[in-house]
Length: 245
Image 1 (cartoon, one colour):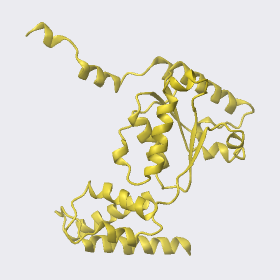
Image 2: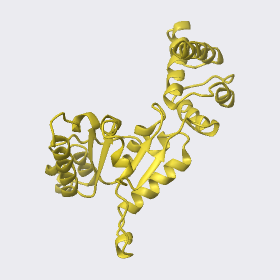
Image 3: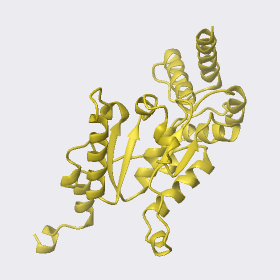
Image 4: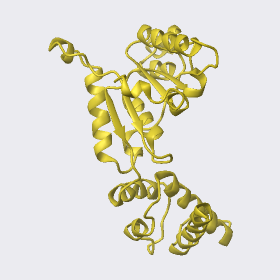
């Protein structure tokens, strides 16, 4: 065997980077997301805003202009609309270290303990810079503190992730369609019309239910038909009506 074959190349280092973390991060959970922007359908304006944010936050140009680069962005809106997925895609497209933590893991009933945990968290992030701190379910803290963190300007950018518009639903459905085989009688534009008021997670559930409908009809089914989506829509619409009642 040639000696050159025993030397590590970039592929070996790339594999190692999926496992090895900076020692400063060991106190907190670290994730290596696999989501990319192409995995997120719709919400084009929000995706562009997040791309600009991470680009400005990691460049030296703002400092050279005497401007403090942005350091915090808050995604807020109804549940199931893709806030976590958007954040993970932003992380997945960056080359930064990552610390992930849930709001419930930071909150403590003991006086001063929550603040101490936050200080420790950001001290760790600064030591591992460039580092993204991904705080999921932050409402568990913010609700208890009456959104004081928002009012005091701790976030440079507030982005509302609303229920998907028809264009957003079309984008989401296109991404979901790319993961399944659809029969010729399935029209994405027709699904867009029939899913008014559906969130991104609702649309994912629609595809799951359509798949289950196809398997109930034939355990070897490989294609989703219009009738499968019709059955799934009926079931989801009934569930939504029962929930409203």
